[in-house]
Image 1 (cartoon, one colour):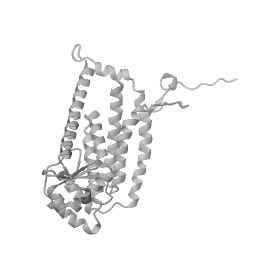
Image 2 (image 1 turned 45 degrees about the horizontal axis):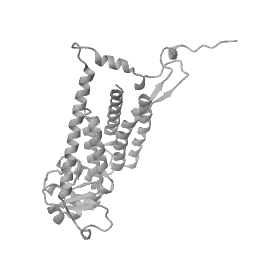
Image 3 (image 1 turned 90 degrees about the vertical axis):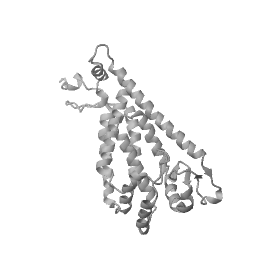
Image 4 (image 1 turned 135 degrees about the vertical axis):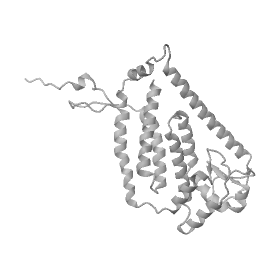
Length: 307
């Protein structure tokens, strides 16, 4: 049952954090800040439910109920309410949850195998063909998959190697240098444990958008139009893997073009990030705090003895 409470708190945090991002931050052009917000919110959602801080107070009125003060037995009894005789709903939920987690894990393993095969089948290029000072492995693929990067590997297909190499390597080097593959991998593992939360897919989509916006940021003001035309002209090709950063992803094309052409957000909009502070305070109370005086004793009026 402790696992159930942990999952409840974690997914509640994810919903609140992403809701804040959707309302206040997603239209900003501060892409790096948005990236760190999303990654930080995921890590906080995983860690906050593990923290429990007991507190005391001297007020006669009770404070709002926190999640740490919800009776585990009351939750347990609600799930154990028999609809059918001798039917254990907790066991059924456990089976469904573990089955879903196993399916997502299998999907992640399959993606790893796919990208591993692409890497080992790639043809390493000599140091004389890589840029001076670049700390990554450059491979050539004879297949038709889109050029992509994965951690310290940059794989160019044959056409891109000869015709679009400079532009694509500039773009993918940003993904490599900023470790965008870490974000993708983190979301995949979070989805294994929180597969039932539909907002995990939204997190993944938003992070992939931000990754592309950051990498497209290498384009200067004078190059915006020609770069947008290049994206439109670039051939539609199959994605390499769900774990890699593909240069071309048709599902993100519209957003990338719009963001390239969009005016940068004014500096004053950075004040929106200050709203994170009260959000964390409120969430910290309801997720972390536990009042040790709640109950009959907390509601009794305080009496003093006069001498």
